Length: 324
Image (cartoon, rainbow, N blue to C red; front, side, top):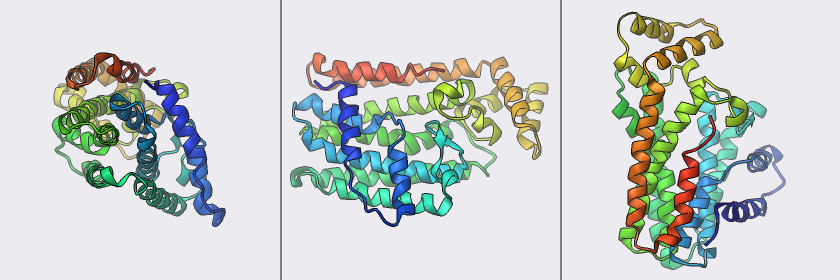
């Protein structure tokens, strides 16, 4: 069985081997810049690991895995523009280092390359892979649209938020696993179990990301903390805080959400203090544990020997232990 590190090494090597034209440099240099950062390559590694559950020969899953990584980074370039993010993986985002138009076009080029790599999959599985990939790509767009809609909608619940992150984040992790399983010639039941495993793991992963945005050390996490608070982003934390807060606490929170001019650090401290008083971090951590437990039960049901599932289970455990 391949370890996660071995899968990372395979993906990194293949990413560095991607051949792109030299000109126009302003289109292709940002792509090299993106892949020169220290990404964890979680999604393509999951594809290789899922394939490896069913076969020792994972070569068939490498091109689909590269397609997934290219697609994922395409979405990040566009998301960073929409969120006006300054940092990604500890470095300037593409739209800040170059400009919005460059980031849009470079992202589009990555999407085209993603389909190029996916199209190189064996004909025996290509139709199934395209079906999963296309459905997932549309769902990710739906999730991003919900995320933007939430910026102007007043009545957003925690349940609405969970649906949004399932589409925006979770389905790509789920699809990465299912695509790997299909490449490994898994049966439909096992492919679907791995999809559901990834879906629950992906939601837990995003909730942890939201938690880390408030509570993480930016030097460890790789991006500035408190960005969601500054932007009034409707996260699981904020939705629960608005539900649980009352009286003076609710008034203070609502006041901060309505302010147009404010000191960013002061707002982050004030809202974080409210989260702490309402134990929002504990509520979020409890939901993460619940989802992660469901994911592990689904993985247990996959019909391969337990020893082969150990690497994927250990990876999931590590994923849920990211540093704050």
